[in-house]
Image 1: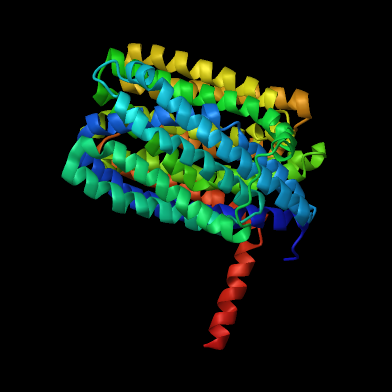
Image 2: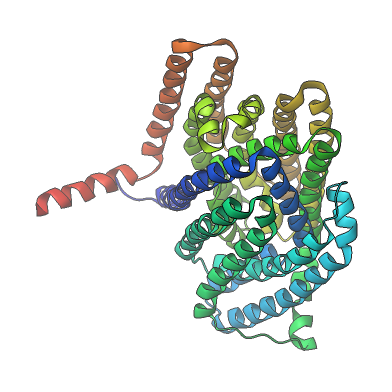
Length: 498
């Protein structure tokens, strides 16, 4: 089979989705051990406490990082594609200078707001000192985000994969012994150590490529104002996203219990972590590629559609398997105390089909430099998700949260599709529509199996549906890529040498 541009495009996506998917799979395995141990040691109340601290720190980080971790990728990627080394050095120096400024800003804001954060987040106890001690984490996140943006813009994909693996291993090694010996008292020190480890690993790789050079003069900082202005809307979008997560968890904490926060967080994060087996390549590989082709509407639509097709075909069999296997996976990954979240998760899995389609489209405003459209679309989603999850929880409990997340994902997809079609002339391919209608029924049937089938019939139906979905995906991917021919050629070379 002759390699066409189309075949190479699909093969590239599949290659790096496989790379980051494999890394994410390893991360999940290591994270599975960590989550199991942490959940066993601290229980739902302890994991809920960790979730509340993380949500607040992420909210502060998103509020003060000026969107540099995203806007810098676009600037560095364009210079990299055009082989402008001097410009890359200048942009990297500018990015690092602004990151140090935002790190100091985030730390100071965390310290100043600590009394209010304690009241808003918990509503009980005095956690002011905890937030003061966590303020350096906000600064470390700003520096880490800037260096990650540099690595993404330079297409250092394997380096990013290695950092990801080292981070999750370090989190396991450092946090579990602390929780075992000190219980909930170790939460703040553990979050600090994990933030510091992530920063050190990232700058260790990045500084070797481009040694640290910063300048706080008007020239360097002023030159970055264009990037900062682009990032302001991203900051607001990040604040809205983190704020939505914060409001939902705070509502559950105030109106139900800390255990409810732990169950919701565990269920939500487990579904998202599983889906990231496929989605983890988006920001590292897809966004830089999309940024370099954003000036041509036809080319942009092609890049987006190919990413959707591969993502949808890869994730669909995984989602069917995940839906059916949840009664085993959740107690295995956490503990039996988390089984009330299974109903929520099985509904929420359906939202991942629409996420596979909409996520590549959602990067279009950023690739075009239209951060205000991105802000508008994110704001609509965040308002809808907060209102829907709270209302659904009051009516149907945790399962209602899953129903709300899936319903909002469907509505958000249609809003995003029609907006980008009008604004950027994005055109969805017939293949995307066809593959969606081929794979989505498997997911719906798997969900119905969880409701109406039991015993051996449950597992038999699940195996049949997962196998059917996998067969469809493999047949299409074999046609779309040269991977099959490459594997056969490699096997022939190996056997001939033997």
